[in-house]
Image 1 (cartoon, rainbow over the protein chains, first blue to last red):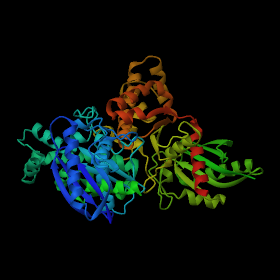
Image 2: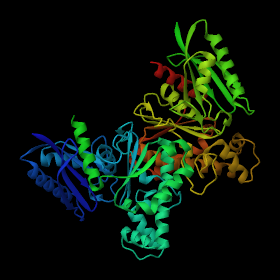
Image 3: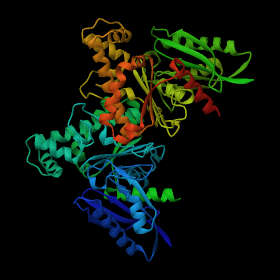
Length: 305
Length: 305
């Protein structure tokens, strides 16, 4: 009987579930709203029930061998406890792996969501076969993940890859992380809305800002140019420090590609050393919303092996 | 007969030579002024002659098995050609390894000087036994090197580790690398002199600025505080991106430790994520001027093995 990993990509708004085969194909998908209200119990209950549904769907033909979850958090390498989740504060300090293992009777593997997306793209997407990759997820926040010499680089505590929290303006906009002027404050969906409002635009979403820019609004265009500039400043630094082969940009806000990518590339070519700058390709992610699920599943398959 | 590597640490001002044993002990040392004048021939001739002297000194009791050179440059992984050497522009595009191999009849191994210093400290100095280390050399410029999972991280083209060229002020002081506001423009010896002159101080060296600060000059103290702040901003970003265990700070300007380290630590604790920030120790290098020579020699021993 073929093995499957039951995988979750947990976002602040939606949770996506799927069953993933060892060859990276996806058997079944499900999307559930993430409970907004306060406590962790509701979220954990939703997750267990959804996994049970997925498991029933694939249960007759496949053997579920593990749970894998991409979470918007840093994960303590020591005890699997979640931290730094501004978009899901209810899960701060929760041992989600222990809970799911108990509730579902399967070993649970956790991965930071942006690192999972980077691993997913490396497995089945835009950076297949590329050994040194920096993944960036532009969504509500700015996430990041690293592949170095073909392997995920998680750092000593498993918290590495937080590219969104590199400072680009020492006295810049306060960031939820406690610092100021993080690139997340200029290149995330949240930042685009804030900058638009500061510019006097009446918008409710980054999509609105995108629409305005596409239709010729100069203020809206400048916001995406600013986003590109700051993202490019961070990329230039990463080019100089890590000499990667590729940047893979995903996440909902990467849909504005045509409005910000010139800014990114200009900064990299003006600021980074010549050879590593010409080495580093900057490409769009290929897997869309499946990247995190696939990456989490890949981690589980690798660690089980 | 015991093997030795003949090692060089080539600086813009001095070149240091030594014979290094496999256990990291240094047999003999020599220091020569680096020829200032224009062309590469003089520099290369000085290097070959100095190596010949060293070789004669150790030649009767030891077998010289390789040449190792730490150079203030990025080294093309493809062909060993040097690039990006603002302090020794005469060697731009020179295949120094090929030249030394021909002149001395020994296989030559090259390493970026700051990466060599990082490897040296990891082998025999402050970061012995630590697997995830960021080395920083504060000298005329700001150099950097990375140890990840116990191994040097050089990147796809061998140019990784250029921590001095991470931007900390998007519209900051122009940098020799072509960018603006690199941390090298705020934390190097050159930057300290520049900032002191901008503040109206009459100084000829960063040592002068240090003396003024130690003797209570507020402007001079503020310069070291500025240096600490910007270095700390870069360290905070590196903590978030790489989650290292240790920063090792060496180079002549690290002598001002007491004047800038509080600034570094404040920025890291204010800006970086809590767990990786408390993980990352910031310590002084232990090997002084031997770090580069030892690191280069270690690279040669490793690659020969």
